[in-house]
Length: 242
Image 1 (cartoon, rainbow, N blue to C red):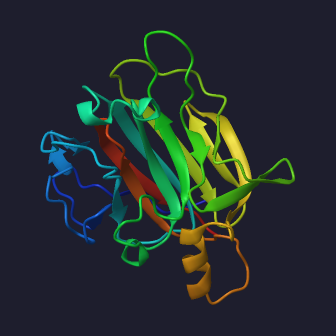
Image 2: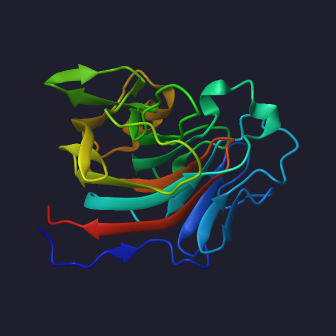
C-alpha cells in the first residue's frame, strides 16, 4: 500500500524533466521535433521527417524507479510515416519502456534501450490485435516458472480500434512481479525481469553493473517513437513501498 499521492511525470505544458534519445542523434537532440507538447499532450509526430531510416526514438523521464504503478492515457492518430509503411508491424505501434538502462549509456546508433517494453498497439477495422503486450529488448522474463526468451508475448486484451484514448496501467514490483492492466483487468503478468547475456546491448549493461545478478530491480521509464503518430495526455506514477 502507499500513502503517497500520484505524481504527474508530464506537467501538461512542457517536456521538463524528460530527455530525448533518437537513434543516430546524441542524447538530448531531436532535430526533427519528434516529441512536442500539443493540446496538453505529448505528441509524437513525424511532420518533419522526409524518411524513417530506423530513427527509433525514446523520451526518458529523468529519474529511475523500482516499485510503482504507472498510469498512461494514449491514443494513436493519423497516418504512419509513408516511408515506414513497409514496416507493417509498426503501424499503430508504440510502447512504454520500464526498467530501462540510462539513456546516457545508450550507443548513438542503438535502436532501443535495454528494457522491458509494454508494447502499445492499435487495432484496424477488422481482426484482433492485443495491446499492453510484452517485448524484451536485451531482456528476458519468467512466466509460469520458466524463463521466457521469446522477443514478444501477447497479452489477453481486447482490440482497441480507432482514435479513442486508452488507459494503460503497469504495476511494477522491483525485480519481482510486473502486471499489465487495462480497464482494471490484468492482461499479462510475469516476473523476474532480467538482462539477457546473449544480447550485445545487454552485455554492455552487464559489464557496468556492480552485481552478478541479472535481475532488473529498477530503471528508467521512456515513451517510444516508432513511426506512427501517438499522443500521451497523462503519464503519472504512484510510488509503492518496497
